[in-house]
Image (cartoon, rainbow, N blue to C red; front, top):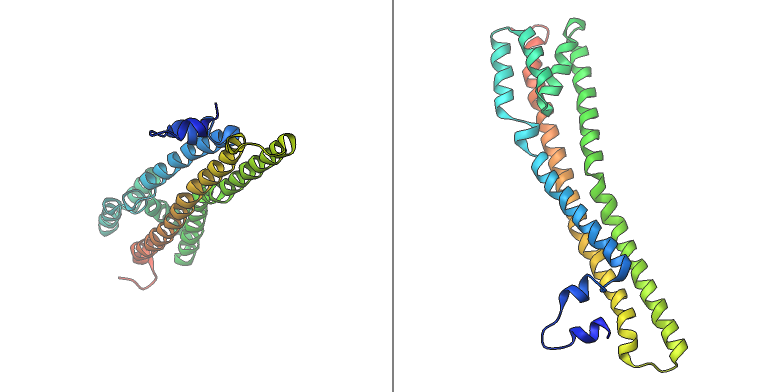
Length: 217
């Protein structure tokens, strides 16, 4: 019996409509993609946060070490900390013997490197957001092709004979869009968050190393 015919009663079986046989093999692939997308989104919201990239405690610790002229200790502390700000300050401090301009260049290069790495990390969401509708379209075309051959073989088939193929077309389109919309939305949010936090970290690190500027008392 066709899965849509079974679902047309008083209580619709959403598992059969949306999962299996639902959108068929392409639908299953889309469901697996949706689970992976959800995991990536959760990981991004946990890792790309101010407390991880620009922790206030790390900034205060570095400032206290600078105030006490404990530069060697500052190098050691920032080398151990994984946050974005500490990475920039550490890169600048390692170039301190070469002068303030070298410190600024090292800091800018470190910021560009880390920012690029973060943007590449979230690029998976952009990729998923662009290819998931293509998978949905693939399922749509496949379902329509099957429906066409059903018509060719049976002449004037009953609507129930076409329900499964049309169901594949509709379900895969739905799943493709359901994955793409949140993936692209979160990608935009994360990209803006990265731009905001990395720019703020750059300003904070410049403020911290300004103590090394020639003529600075």
